[in-house]
Structures are given as structure tokens and as C-alpha cells.
Image (cartoon, rainbow, N blue to C red; front, side, top):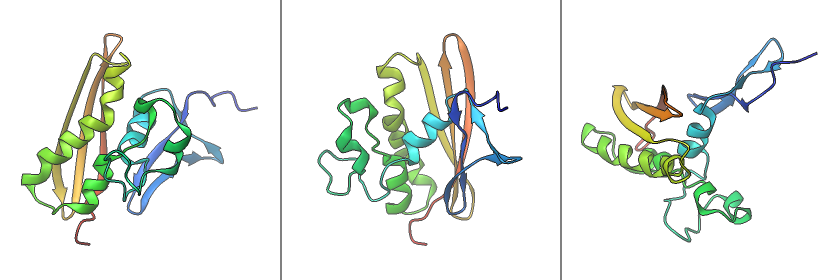
Amino acid sequence: MIDNQQGDVLLFQTNDEGDVAIEGGITQMTGSFETAFYLSLFGGNELDSGLLESPKAYWGNLLENEEQFKYKSRTQYLLRSIPVNSGNLSKINKAAEQDLQWFLDLSISNKLLVSSSLIGLNKIQISITIEASGKEESFNFVENWKSGL
């Protein structure tokens, strides 16, 4: 009997997109925000610029009536469309803040901080700190910056 299958499926980033964590044949779960963050940053169509009425918009958005639950994944789009350089980190941070704004809009969080840094050749780390219900948590996502690859 599996009794730890509560929460969200734990997703993580790999060199060729995301994957599901499986250990001992059992899908790993998380009771934290990391899956919601991951999907917000990387869950839409990577060719979707996040602009309204984009012809490349994620198809699942057509079924969603609440704007804050539509995946725009501006972060994912920028990591595939702007040059890799430290000067563009502020654009990535702003995109991530926009992708995660729904946490603030729905009062899930009262504080959300985003920062990013280049940690290797064509590799970025996006760090997110959230405060919710008086508890602060931090998460790091490492992603390939695929522009020009």
C-alpha cells in the first residue's frame, strides 16, 4: 500500500526538459511549491512569447477561464530567444516574476523574490524565495539557456 502519495508530483529539470521523480517504482510527491513554480516557469509552450493572443499559446490555456492559471512561461521563452549574457539576467528575473505573479494575486504568498545567475556555459540558476503563511522557503532551478545552441 502506498501511503505517501499526497501533494503534487515532483518535477525536476534535466538537460532535455523536465522529468518526473520516481524512486523504487513510486512517483515522488511534494507538498511544497516547487511543482507549481516549475510549471509556471517552464510549463507552457516554449515558443509562446507570453503576449496576449499569441498563436503559439499553450493549448491547455484554451480550456482555462481564470487568467492567473494560464501558463505563459515567459521565462522559458526568453531562455530560448535572447542571447546568453549577464546583461539579460534582469529580463529573465522580470519574466520569472511575471510567471509567478499569480502567487501574489491569489494571496498564496505575501513575498516572492527572484534572482538568477549564470553558473556555467549556457546554464542559468533561477532562485526563488517565497514567504507564505509566515514560513519562508527557497528553491533553485537550473536550466539550459538554449538561445543560440
